[in-house]
Structures are given as C-alpha cells and as structure tokens.
Image 1 (cartoon, rainbow, N blue to C red):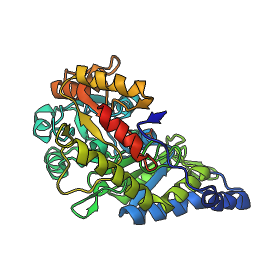
Image 2 (cartoon, rainbow, N blue to C red):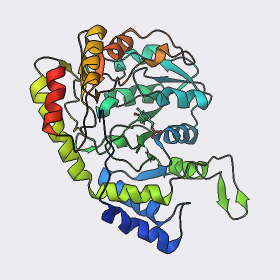
Image 3 (tube, rainbow, N blue to C red):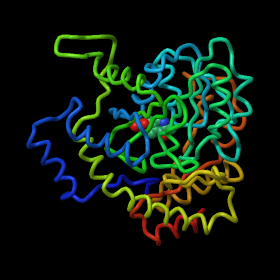
Image 4 (cartoon, helix red, strand yellow):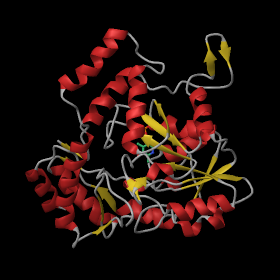
Length: 352
Ligand SMILES: *Cc1c(COP(=O)(O)O)cnc(C)c1O
C-alpha cells in the first residue's frame, strides 16, 4: 500500500545511541537533557532564538494563543488542517474566516482588513504546504490594527524566506513534528517566539504553571515533550539533509512530468521548499474523484489535503468561503517520502 507519506525511521543504531542516554540517566521527561539538546540544535538548524518544544503541534497553537493573550475573535484560514480552527474554539476564541488566494492557497492578505472588527485580537495564517504567506503585508496590517500574528507553520520546517527562517515572522510561529511531517519526533511540536518574555510565559504554561518544588504560579497544562520524543527528534535531525534531498528529488520528478498538464501551487518566489507535499489541482471535483478511484484500485492512497474546507464543518461553521470551497474540492496531494521508488512514482503519474 502506497500512502501520501511514510514516516522516516532512523537506523536503529543511531536512535539507540540517544536512547542509551535515557537508560543511563533515568530521566524520561520534564525538560530533560535530550529535550534541552534538541532545543539548542533546532534553534541553530532553523535559525531561531526563542524555541519551546512541546508535546504536539496542536498544543503548540494552544500555548501560543495563551502566551500571547489572544481572546475574542481571531482571523484565520478555512483551508487548513482542522487543528488551526479547533484550537481556537478549544481556547474560547472565535475563528472568523478570511478566504484564500486561488494560486498560493494561503490566506488572501487583500481580504484581511475588511474582516477586522472591534473584538479581533489576532491573525492566524497558515503557510499552506510549507509555502510562505505574504508575511510583510500581513505583519503590516497587524501592526496598524494592533493585532497579534501567530503563524501556523506546521509544514514549514527548515523553510527559509529571503535568506532567513520563515519562523522569524509573527509574534509566534508554531511547528508540528507529527510522524507524517517532513521532520518528526513521533508526536511533537514547537513554538518560535519573537520575544523572550512570551517564551518564559509559555514555559510556565506547559508545566502546570509550576515554578518550584512548592510553588504554583498560575494556570497551566501539561504540554511537555518527553525524552523519547527528543531521542527520535535528534536521530531524525541527524538525517534531515538527506530526507529533504530525497524528497526534493521526488518533488522534482513529479513537477517535471506534471507541470504542463496541471495547475500546481504557486510558490512564494522568495522562499525555499522542504518538499513536504505535492498538491495537484484538478479541473473539477469529478476529475479528482475519478483519479482518486483509479489510484486506490492500484493500492495508492493520495490524500485530499485539505478537505473539507473548514467553513463547512458543522461545529465550526463560518461564513461561506467560495475560493476555499472550490480549491478544497479540487486538490489532491500525491505520495511524497524519502524512500518512494521510481516505478511507484511512474504509476502515480500514469494514473493521474
Ligand atoms: C499537522 C498540523 C497541525 C497539528 O499538529 P499535530 O502535531 O498533529 O498536533 C496543525 N496545523 C497544521 C496546518 C497541520 O498540518
């Protein structure tokens, strides 16, 4: 069975080298040495200053909203994984949708300002499939209207924009290290904060608000990354350049053979790609469904990221977003992972 992605598993010997250290120290969690080492190495690899590792990418969003005091209404995109919106609702914040650009699939910055109301406190854009948003425009609108910006950067591990980390835009940017992402820690996530003060507040939030053996300073939750997650993260980080290189070969192979027959995502010209996804836009939903059926019959399972458009989800229900509905109906993400073979890619190409 060929699926849209396949988690990267490092060689056992490489992983064991880190796990041995857990057995030696018996430190399993609570800001242990491996989490500290991974934090330092990721700050260096990504080029960010104030990074906090957490248990998953969903908690990364929730903690970021809390640390930055987001309340009321937040403007976000309906074309994303459900967690972008569900985390807002979970935190008592109302998501209000801004429609997307039909070529980049990102929030359309030209539509943001008209959606701002008195109770809007934040903008939560998504760098969809790792493709950076128009960050200068969004950051400028936010500044002018006194709003916070938290980028759901779940797909942008290692992506650089104008020569520096894309994570350095916004008051915070969150990553997901879920097994299906380009870089993973089994489950895991991180928040890159602009200000150290926000990082310090978040550090309390992820550990019950506890500041000492006998001191509870405020409300918190458990959102800590554990040492086994960090061990996997260190081992995968050792191979990240290889992973991205392999994925780029797969991406280029598809791109070369499909670019003349399909509309593909328009990439930000100032940004690099980590080759996490290969979305293809069909002319209509029927064409997509026919293709999906053909591939499924051959035991190939691409995914409809992101479907359904979140404005149509019963419990969220926003104003109808026409562009997002249209794109969500027509986009299919093809299988991309480091060990995919040429015959498999050829089979995918023949059948789409
Ligand atoms: C994967 C993902 C998340 C959630 O991350 P988890 O680590 O699975 O909790 C949030 N937003 C987007 C856009 C994602 O793709």
